[in-house]
Length: 265
Image 1 (spheres, rainbow, N blue to C red):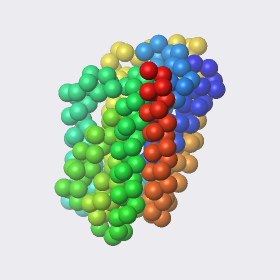
Image 2 (image 1 turned 180 degrees about the vertical axis):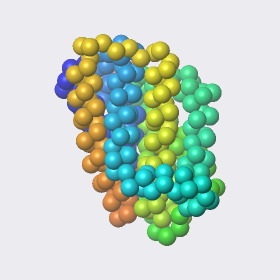
Image 3 (image 1 turned 90 degrees about the horizontal axis):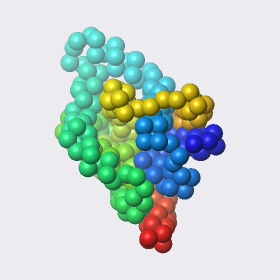
Image 4 (image 1 turned 135 degrees about the vertical axis):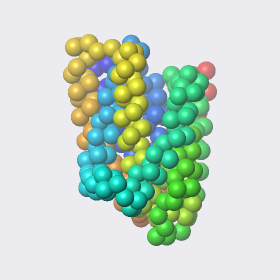
């Protein structure tokens, strides 16, 4: 993978991790167009590095919220911060279950299955359209809501289903405040990303060669900077009910992916 490809895939990851258009789906499409010249172990390392970059951008954007949560948790009282942290843990259960027991089945859906990605992008579009039509409220995420949102996050492990789109849409459709829905959606994924990174690092399946260090670095920087922009922008878009534009985008890209897949078969 050359530097230009690393930058492009880094920007794609950074933008689509937060914008509701499916980062996994766009990476699959991007790799199909650019070609993936990494060996499997090298490709896994590149994916881990990009995800770390977007997790770090989330931490930077929500640094005040995270610091407040940590201070509240260590007071060892059943306060709002500890309850919020408990809701995040609850929301992680479905995705952790799928990751532990259905990892091979999930991975089989990746690897250039552009037809499947296209169909799932259409599903994402429907969710975004429904969320944009939901009425705004001042309701915060409840424990039952957190688990349902967690189920949508687990489903979003499929390539083409946007994680942020699915979780924010589910939260808003359940009647939660749009800004609170966005905040919960972005914070709930950080522990999952860090946990997945640790699992991959300890698996022995990651290979590093010094020749790949520069593409990894520029990919990390591209994903981090674009992630900062996308995360901040997405919060404003959710508040202003602008998700329909992304629904249209997902329909267009999804149809293009389906046509591309059928044409090449």
